[in-house]
Length: 213
Image (cartoon, rainbow, N blue to C red):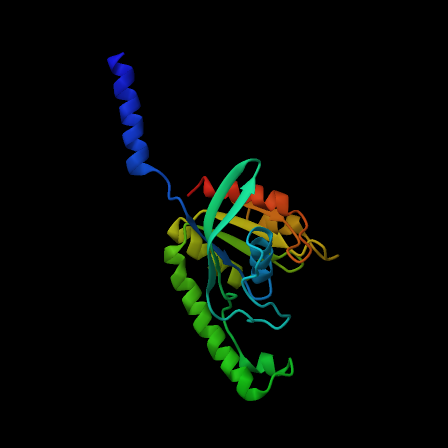
């Protein structure tokens, strides 16, 4: 009896001192135009009724880290609360001339490039505050890029739990298997953030990711 009481006491003390954080800081990372903000908007609309940011076909629409506190999602009678952090698209180089080609005026293009560069630096710094990260990739594009390697390398070095999202599965050129082959060490879930396709599997994967924190 005494041994059982001691075991229960030890278990309670362990839970007090080593229990997991109530709210998880969940970051969304990936290259420009992969659909990070689109996915963040989908989640926020599903569970808070409001979007978090603006989306555009022009790269680097998101140039500052933006977040939503206490996003609470439910799946199979389970509840998870987290801080959703949407980050600017990571790129090895931001050239203002690329924006000029998209019919943006030179001065605005230069400003956008400068802000995008600062946003990338800010996004990398925020990695130190992340409990887990969702890497959002465009499933119609080649995953074997220097940008993706840089992102994943930073996550590995910090030992941050990762879920890889293969976005844009609604498009004909989508190839989830190529992304799975590129990142075999991580769970990969294919979705369409734009149309809300396969979000149930995504939310299930988020709960699995939270257990690794």
